[in-house]
Image 1 (cartoon, helix red, strand yellow):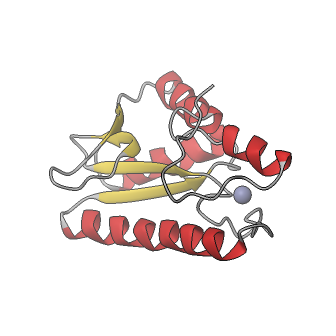
Image 2 (tube, rainbow, N blue to C red):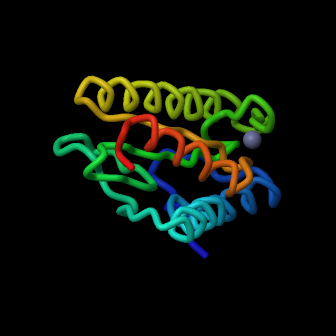
Length: 147
Ligand SMILES: [Zn+2]
């Protein structure tokens, strides 16, 4: 299981629950990503995985359709503040608020930079059922006239 590396300045997780949450939050190849990729592949769609779609943009998309210029992000409910499942940890509350707000700001900035470069961006929540997420991606590809 992937474990997020703690950086200098990160607070020590205050409880076993928080520590476990850290450990359940891999940065890539999460189960929802794997399930979405499997479903896309099953539908005959071919893509690249975990690459930076734009040279110079140091951010990776989870699934990338290079030719169609479509970048797909599977956003974790906790890390990206899902309206249904996002939570604000009570311990180290200020640090977490800044961290999570920063994630959301970076998401919007990534969207803007990609759009400005002519890319389509699709974001699905990790809670989205894989078949539904694949429908969203496929519809976007179709609408873009790429299939
Ligand atoms: Zn959610």
